[in-house]
Image 1 (tube, helix red, strand yellow):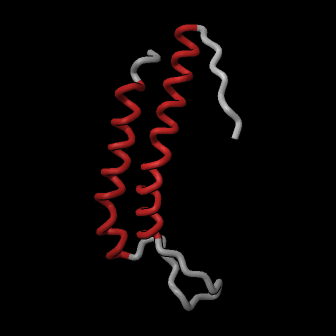
Image 2 (tube, one colour; image 1 turned 180 degrees about the vertical axis):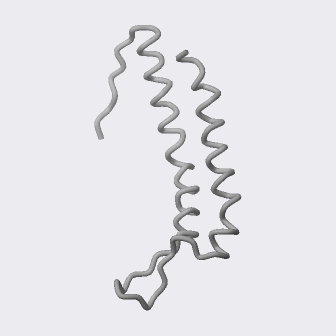
Length: 87
């Protein structure tokens, strides 16, 4: 069971990224969840660019999360004590 994530985790991430990418044209066209100025809150938010930033955040974050899962797997399967560095 602790080995399934090795394949499933990257496939899940790829699925998320493909889904977000496929939704980008519709989000841009419809203005979905976007808030344009002027409005009573005096704030602007563009969901299209937010989704692009989320997609780009996978570049630095995915390896970090994936290798953390590998360390956790090693600890559970081999009974090793893994010391993680505090930054």
